[in-house]
Image (cartoon, rainbow, N blue to C red; front, side, top):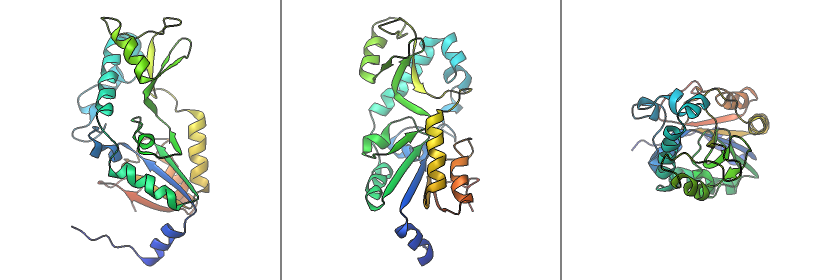
Length: 229
């Protein structure tokens, strides 16, 4: 086992920080058994993003897309937060302000007990009608999903198609969540980047903003990224 060495100066920055921002990607959930999108076993090695994660693909074949997202929900429902998620919950107790900005849609940070989570790519456990905007939790969605042989869930109010509350390719990230994330990056004094490739913008720009403001950055990743010094 490699011994982790850290200078006293860097350790003091971690200990004495007041406002902490944590940015997480798919890598933090891998230990829970959720496959990443990129990498040798990533989801996009097996499926086409345009077919399964775009509004055009959903409108063309809502049954296929609904089935795929239902499969992903079942994977998530069968796993639990791992030690990485739990460690962040414990770390939160040591700082006056602690915010997690996650690119993940798996809800595991909240399930682990983290209190201040900004989901910039949405949450796969939520769904909404594309016509009237009504939201459906997983339980209600499952009921509607199983009611038709085609497995095309429709709103019980207006009969519009129901889609997952996630950001698809070609869609804008939620304005409020992105604005909050950049504000946190500008005002924090310690930033962790965990399990993210730091390549997908604008999420990749968030730690860069923190770095430009002189914030101490701690990167935890198995691979080098554009953020790596």
